[in-house]
Length: 375
Image (cartoon, rainbow, N blue to C red; front, top):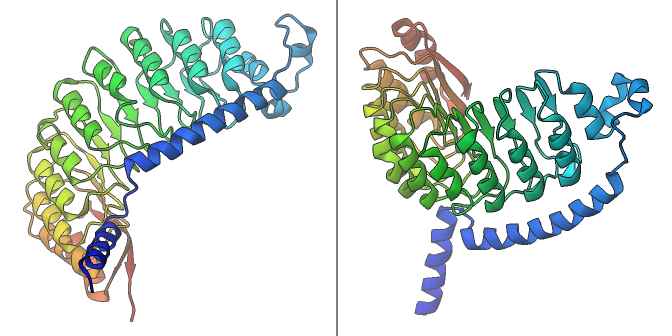
């Protein structure tokens, strides 16, 4: 076989080991999708807009039972004094959300504003952010799946600099890149009061990991961080290691469905050995095998704070689960209450150890979603 074929074979094999979409390809694809989606969005908005007179008699005849099919502006007007307004999965668009923001944001009593998949785009989010700058009621804002980019993030960042009431923010499922979220990372290093941040289902990679590490080094408010389903690899997690290990306020971290492998699991193990604040860690679906399980298990012998560990849908199999359980049994003490091994098939012997020995030593600990093989 000639050298060119050998090189090609090695290249294909290497790619097969780590099924990771390149950022360049994904960015091009997502950019095209955003352009066409924005065109389609404008078409739908033109078809959906209705003339609304705030003082008309139509509102008096409105039937609350049919509100889900009515115009979002009317719906918001009727719900603006409730604690939660959920416009998720409606075709709201930038025009109608601007009208809602201008008319009703100043006087609303809403604490949870849920705008998932509302076709807002950058203009719509700018209107939302502008309306929330001086808002004193909204503590939770969901802007997931709205086809946002860096312009939207800039608007949100400017709002967060002045708004001291918003505690929970979701920007999930927006195909955001490392560069897109840079403005938000800078704001989070300031006097931002945000406590919970969800950036799951985006395209965040190693550069983002360095940036969020800098945030954790100085931010004393962030307690929940959801980074599931991104492009984080072991190098990115390594860039966050020191800050994660020293974090004093972070209690919940979800890095499931990334690309950690055993190398990343080793980094997470080092974090667990030194961190004294994390109470729940989710690392599902990260291609972790027996070696990674041994790192995590050994670290748990030295961690006395974690209460929930979710390791499901990895590649542990019976051997990896056995290593993990054996390490736990050698721990002098643990506060762990839930160990989720969803999708892991074990033999009857290990299942029996979990039910008896582990339960006897740590009565509070539940091993859940473990599949027992009876072959």
